[in-house]
Image (cartoon, rainbow, N blue to C red; front, top):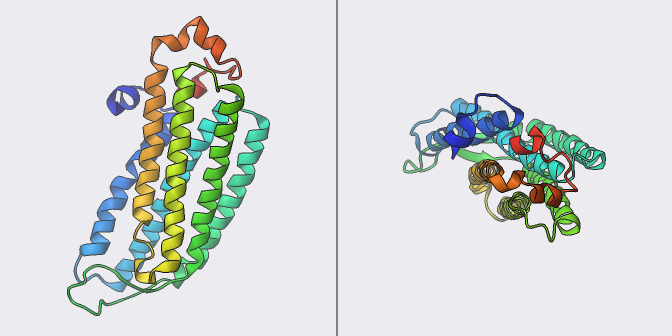
Amino acid sequence: MQVTLIWSRGDWSIGKNLFMLTRYIPFIILPLTLCSSFAANLDVHICETLLYIFAILETAAVTLSEVIFGLRAYAMWNRSRAVLVIYCCVAIVYVAVVVFILQSFLPSVTFAESPIAMIAGCYKTSGSSVVFAGFVVIILTEAVTTTLTLYRAFRHFRHTPNALIQNMTRDGVFYCVTMFSMSVANLLIIFLVPMEYADMLTVYQTVMHTMLATRMQLHLRKVDQHTYLVDRFAEESLAPMSFMRSTFLADI
């Protein structure tokens, strides 16, 4: 599906750029995670460097995933100015919280040599719990996207027999709820387990964010290729989405 729907398209559009960045960042994160978890005799400075790299890559991956889901909701609302204003406000809060966390949390994390020789990798000894704010803002962002998607689908597309709308609604809601649940799980772990294990699901959540967001892109492009999307009935059934035939919807 990636070869047919993404790679074979020669143009480098917004959708393709988002897909490439979001889909393949985990291929950098996962090897570094394995290194930091299982490599022997890692220097403290190396662990600190890996921590900053993880923070940047994971933040980028989750942010890009949220952008993809936000664009999907924005498309369903026919590029409404009100929805755009809502997402601009969400983006301001999101960026402010992320900057605050990066400045407050990263310097607070310390590493030391493992007390047991059998434990390899980076051994975290302390860190601020302020990182929980990051998962809170992710939850709020996903709540906004899920609410906008559900409301639009219920009010305007509840009886629409169009596969494109059904795909956008079903995948959008299911994936957002899935990521919402993982954020809640990360919040609980932060407060219920020792700091050494507080990030046990962070990488998993990051990878799942990218997989679900890009998977929805693939599904949408696959459905968009079906011929019934261009017949007269399909166009009429998408009346609330007047830009349906534009490149914006098909691209994202």
